[in-house]
Image (cartoon, rainbow, N blue to C red; front, top):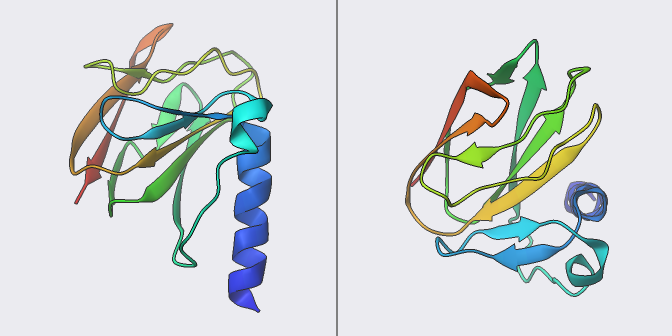
Length: 128
């Protein structure tokens, strides 16, 4: 039962997030509904991690995750923010308050990022 609820919540997050695009790191980036609806998940072991944007900071600012984990950023600030990779792997459009951005990390590595308009806002995803 818990797996069904978790998968249902994941589907809602994906629907909010938009569609899928795979970048050079193997990450799937969601940005529009038409492609998102064609993405299916074969595993019941879908993992998720959340990053909240609040008070001009990422919480948590550093995450250690397993390959295949979906990271969802949610903007809870009143100003718009972006997720901009320091090396070009993860880049979102501007997110208004309540906006989300999701990426599935399929390759090991360290991914550092910042908010485009607020360069002091920094974060890091470590994929093992």
